[in-house]
Image 1 (cartoon, helix red, strand yellow):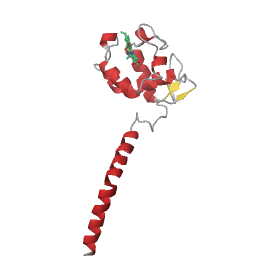
Image 2: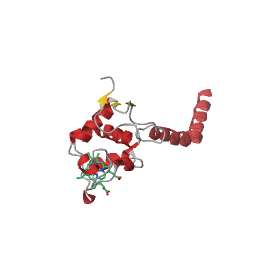
Image 3: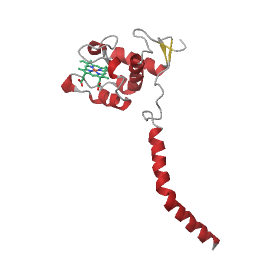
Image 4: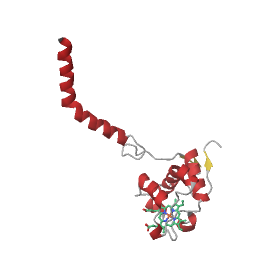
Length: 147
Ligand code: HEC
């Protein structure tokens, strides 16, 4: 008898509060993601402008290996492609990912989804360019922190 009352109480409270808390859980789950608004912290670590965390270092190597500079300039200042110093101020991480995978061939920006290096390191590449755009990472040669 007591058990039944308890169960129906539980059922009723789930009905009342259920939807609200599910919605909240969902929100918490998405904003906990890398690109969510809750994680506005910078995606790179840099010391003295030239020493960066391992992931950002791989991103820089990817930048060099894929020769993005032939269109965006050695200092990301822009050539036939736009200045990435400027673009990274507004481009979201997710949009950057989409761009790397699909490019914008009709506008002259190639896609890089055929590159394993880009597939593995696009986040580091984003971090590197973000650091350049923020003025925190210097142009030119980088070293991984601790070496
Ligand atoms: C063959 C020339 C070329 C190469 C190589 C190239 N890009 Fe681009 N990129 C462009 C052009 C042109 C645009 C402008 C596209 C547009 O007008 O929408 C662009 C746009 C961009 C943008 C800005 C997109 C936006 O919405 O603001 C980013 C970021 C970018 N490129 C990153 C890269 C990276 C990283 C590499 C190397 C992996 C690379 N690009 C290699 C030509 C190039």
